Length: 100
Length: 100
Image (cartoon, rainbow over all chains, first blue to last red; front, side, top):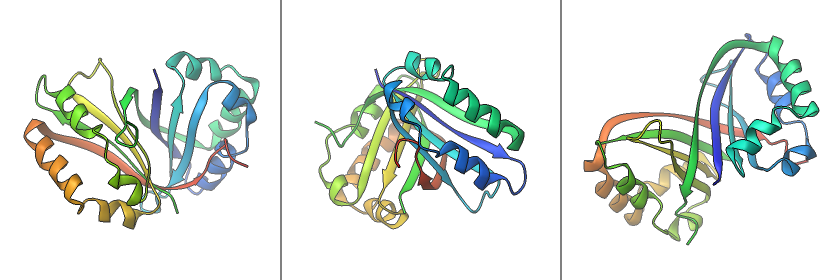
């Protein structure tokens, strides 16, 4: 069952684009780990927030990815740039109007 | 610029799966209107909530889609099943670690 992880990361003032750069750095391990989609974005009305939408082959695949060295290194690099404010949802995808 | 619309729809108690059925009904007009991704999901820990993640070719394409007859009909059909509780984020996609 496709698993979705959707959320926001608050950043230290003015550090948003550095966090975006870390999160969007090409990582070929993610596909291998079961990542289907990983989109990072911004909204200039909320200038210290990074938005993330992820789709994974399963919740287990997502959880396991957090142990990858490359992912752990990115988290460690981003952590000092974050404010600690986070929000998010996790859900199981049931369908799409784009598919039969 | 790819536009993301991510959110939750609260439903009347026990009506979640009816809302999911409406939102996941095949709609070929959405692609034509610029919809790149439209995933609908659930989380049994929040049994009266429907989760939606949408990606569109632009914010304008998303806005225009709300005027399509098929979309207006779906909204009208779902509306009586909703609680009125909604949350969401809209943002501009800046990149993905899955792409170069």
